[in-house]
Image 1 (cartoon, rainbow, N blue to C red):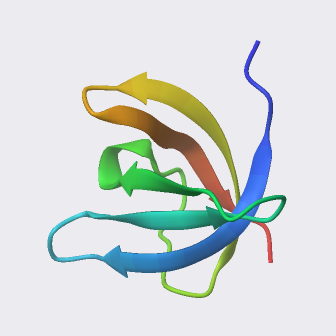
Image 2: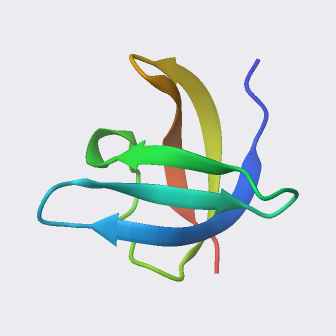
Length: 67
């Protein structure tokens, strides 16, 4: 079962469809691709997400804006 994580969208390029989310509980950042979004996101959005193994490491999936 995946646990929900929270963080802030540090960077997101809507034209290229990817970005990074900084975790609230650490300095860790996770890659996010447009295919893992439930809501549209932009830089500075507070989000909730799950982690999933991707081709190059962990990816944020089921990303929803919470604030």
